[in-house]
Each structure stands twice: as C-alpha cells, then as structure tokens.
Image (tube, rainbow, N blue to C red; front, side, top):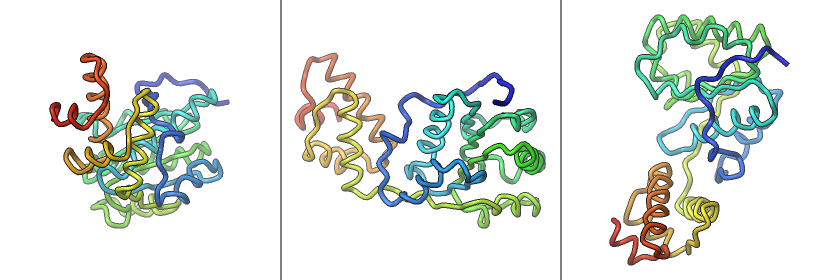
Length: 224
C-alpha cells in the first residue's frame, strides 16, 4: 500500500460500473477492470461516457481502500500544472478532459514528467480527451509519444435503444417506475445527450416528489 495522500476530488457516488450501460464499449470496460493495463487513453465526444468510466474506476479503487484520484481538468481553467506534483505516489490517477490543458507549454511539460514518474512508481494512469492522442494538437513531441504507449479506446455513444435502457435503469435506482414509452418520449422531446437526460431525470424525480405525482407523459409535458 502506498502512502495516503489527501484527495481534493472524490469520484461521485452515483458513477459506477453497475449503472454504466456498456453498449459497444465491452472491450474498453474489460481493459479498465484489468489491473494489468497501466495506461489507458479514452477519447470520444460529449455524452459518450468517458467521465462516467473514469469516475467509476476511481470509485472502485477507493472502495478497495486504494489511493485513487479522479481529476476533472474541465472543471476549472485555473488549475496549475504544479498540482500534479506528488500524485505519482498514488495507485490510480484519472485525468479527465486533458485536451483542456493541451497547447499550454507548462502543462505539457508537467504532464510529460508526471507520466514518467507514474511509470517509475508503477502507478496506473487513465486519461480522457475529446480526440485521440495522435490527433490532439500537442506541441511537445515526447508527450505525444508517451500518450500513445498504452491502450487507446474510442468511447462509443449509446444508441437510442441503449439510452432507453440506461434511463429506465437510472429511474429504477431512484425508485421511479419508467416505461419504454416515457423513456422514448424524453429522448424525442427533451435532449439526446445522455448526461443531460440524467440531469433531467433528477429534476423530474424532485418535482414528482414535491407534487406527489407519478412520472407520466402529461406530467413531463407540463414540466418541459
């Protein structure tokens, strides 16, 4: 067990492998759960599940009393690159949306050295970005080279039927009864972004409790 470090960011409790609808991401999920893969680079568009997966693996490590940190670089534009110092002592680091700092010379150098320190300490590093490492506008050639050393996966967005399954599963976890018809209505009349659908579901759950009403299409129409 490596020395415990204080965690500034904890993986949200509701992001887990159990509530992740796999879709076409079976191999990616297998590699994440396989501890032998020390470097994984995940890329994909908004709503493809990248953040969920990084939060889920960090949460799983923490549940096993291992040192893990999920760090969302998109959260704040003012993150200094010095924040990476010392994190190589942890078992797992998940850096979400690294494309937010790519192009910044100080950040690229910091990421390069951090990668090397993680490798020396045999820690596990999982990264995400909107594009593959090969296609990111990385100015530091050595960093681009390092980021292609491990496994690279494109996180595939869910199809409509899988989104319906995911919505119904999330509703069930909240104690809500949701039919295919209601899930399909939300998909067709609200948004097709999975993250936004989940946020909408949370709001509908709150409103239905406040008004003591069931989740029905008339109720959703009125809310929307």
